[in-house]
Every structure is written in C-alpha cells, then in structure tokens.
Image (tube, rainbow, N blue to C red):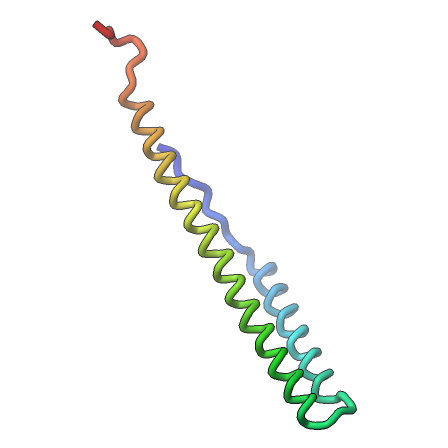
Length: 95
C-alpha cells in the first residue's frame, strides 16, 4: 500500500498569507476610519468589512473541508483497489 503525500505548508508561505491578510484588513479599516463621512456611513462600512472578513474565513473553511473529504474518499478507493490487486492471482485457474 502506498502512503499518500503529506502536503506541508512552508513557514514562509504561512507568514506571507498572514501578513497579507493583516495588511489588507488594517489598510481597509484605516480607510474606513479616515473617510470624510459621518458616523453612520462609517459604521456601515466597518460592519461590511467585518462581514467580508467572516465570510472569507467561512469560505476558506468550506474549501478546506471539501478538499479533505475528497482526499479521504480517494484514500478509501485506493485502499480498495490495492486490496483487490493483492488478492488477484492472474495465474490462478478459473475452473
């Protein structure tokens, strides 16, 4: 039986993604705070930013869960195929 490849996220990629997300949220938050508008439009934009951030996390979790579920199914299918191949004897008599 073959072992599936384990994907490892490098530290550099993880840091780059985290820093990029932080810069994006801070820059957008600073833009909302510094807009020359009243408190109600500013509050609406801040709430919209919060909604986008939570929706982004939800979408990322759904994509990850879908990927993990397909990996489990493919591993089970691969295990079944491996079992069938090990049990099959091409030289056995069919009589």
